[in-house]
Image 1 (spheres, protein in one colour):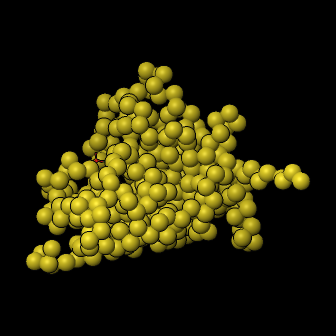
Image 2 (image 1 turned 180 degrees about the horizontal axis):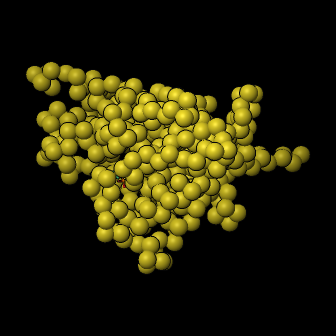
Image 3 (image 1 turned 30 degrees about the horizontal axis):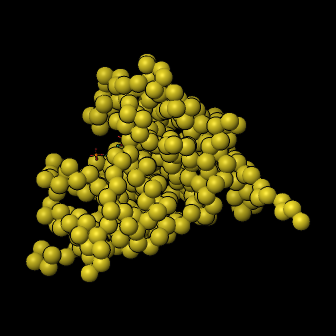
Length: 340
Ligand code: AHG
Ligand code: MN
Ligand code: MN
């Protein structure tokens, strides 16, 4: 007897299926996640052409609110997300790594129920050398009345996220998201321009074999962080050491470690006491994904998901990945100096 092959499922169909778990859903949220997948397809197309089109490569010559070079594709991706998100008027506020201030969206014909924050292009310094880059997004529910939006509508902790995910523009393009019912991954079939379900219910190992950190920053780490990384490398509690992998695109490093088991670290350094990564557009959304897959994310002293942002561009130290490894780091960082 011939077996019927498994059904193919697009990300849009999957999101629609998920909506059926909430019979009272209006479709606003489903529509919003579909908007994100549309933006991701457009950015993916452009990233894939980056080596061909000279005017797309390189820096704009400007700097963003963080004082960093703005790559042309950063601007392009930011623009695409602003254009695609909230087509049903369901988004009231959009925050982006590339914009100093949040953008208040046109909600004339919609509910404005959601707040979206994103890093349109993560790892953008890698674009010119054909290394994987990504997009990170987080979706919160608006808290105040639509005509009285306040800081607390934007500045919500990761624990209040209703969905989060990322897109990785790698050897293939993948979209990974969670809306609280597991973590699911979709691989883009470029021939038909669709994200197809390829990784259902992703779970991450409790402890991993990989550590990912920029060891070039070691001279500027605290002695304690140096000791943590030394033990990850040489072995802990009589066990063997881990292997090192560091791409320099958070999305790509996170994605590999999520699937294989491992830990990503961006500790504070002299001069950057809060590290480099942004709470709202990078750390909190990835923390939601990590926890939904069985992993954990910490700022070194407690869960990333519990931190209430002080502003849209607030930075935090980040330790994220396999739960057992992140908990071990938290424990190490809490030791008094003479116990190290
Ligand atoms: P972005 O391109 O959005 O500014 O993010 C870059 C981030 C992150 O992707 C990466 O992990 C990290 O910067 C790398 O920083 P270092 O060069 O200090 O290692
Ligand atoms: Mn980034
Ligand atoms: Mn970025």
